[in-house]
Length: 577
Image 1 (cartoon, helix red, strand yellow):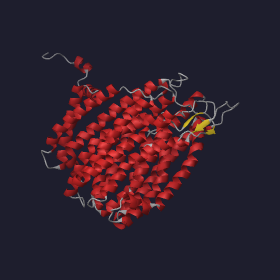
Image 2 (cartoon, one colour):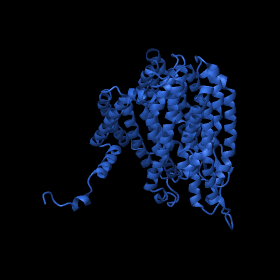
Image 3 (tube, helix red, strand yellow):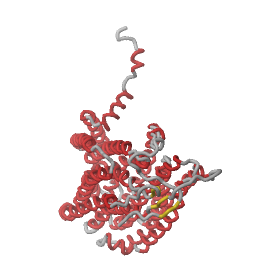
Image 4 (cartoon, one colour):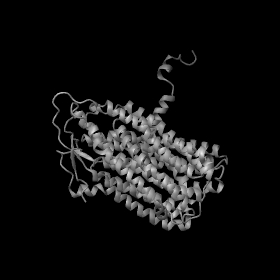
């Protein structure tokens, strides 16, 4: 099936090239300075951390008010709707499609600043159709809730409650899609503050309804909070987006003769491989819900709490490529494959360092972390033990999850949803097959997950499900690393894998020493602090000794910052005078 059925519009957008047609377009000076990147990452990290903290508070309140029982299981089945919509419409698919599209529009704007604004043309060509599709999907999800619950969790103890909550959470599809579209446009313009704050708004909405209405509506209050939070997400981005359109170069019509422009080619079917990959990836959650529904009541809740804690480490690693993705897309749009490769290699190393440090911490301190966060109210010691066991198994798949998040962005940037009409159409069969490579790799990992879950669940329960998940996602990451090279980004695999091996050895050493230290005390707070500090120090020391540049650089910078100033030392009199 061809994914290239163009519709002619105006003006033109360039497609990626093997070499820049205009050196000025790929001029590194046009890219943001290092200071801007640091500031953007700092803002994104702070707001994302705030959103994650509020999300953790949300989970804590769910555990406190409702524990882990058939009610929370019913809500978490309904939670699958926003859980699926978020990566498809906010974090992954929409970003993979629209950030490269807006990056191409910005490249064209630089080539012809006096012509009609391609960014505004792109919005007019895509946003109305998107709103229509999202409204249809939202309505379909609400109407199909009974069938959805029956298929996803056939062994659920309270399907009626799950259907009610699913119909409420179906509202999220429309605002999630709008938020994802607007966030992609703002990030492509290097405006990161408002997009980074969407999960703060989302969780504020959930917490507001949950705190005020949990005693009246029970677990339904969480579903209503999800719907309200999604509306707040989209509302947060509308004003910055409209402001950017009004103040952009296309806000005022160009005077004099309008420059001649070619046709813009919109490739709507290019979204199919992206959507297939995202949905296949999300199917891991469906498998857990399906197999978990046959296990004792509360198992789905234990899996959910474990996943939420485990993914905090992965989210920290993904923040890096959230900021750098527009730069990679811009380099690919300008045809600078070398700059794109260098950026991707750096992102892979930095994300691996952050995630492996978090993985080591969770492996060493999982019981104390769960007890510290969740063990109160309806969440008892048995729930703590079950959740901690799942976290430790989940953690083995976190590095692969993060690496997939880094690699998939440049992969799909090489096949944007728009191109210049004058550029050759990528219609050859090899390119079309490569479009589907990530979905195929994810499908293979999904098969591994299913087989592993079916084999391990009868004996090990929830940890068996988590093990199948970790093995499956790791297989997908290995395939996708090879696929990125096939796609045309010449990664130096020996360099990348060698750096990851050093980081992995550092993490293993940190776990080996941090685990016994965390077990020295039964107090959850003290155990977490002691174990976490040990893990961090050992990871930093081993990473520096082994030559992991992602660790050695920050350690040396910290040593220089904390060490005595050479100027101050020169001013001191010699000892004894």
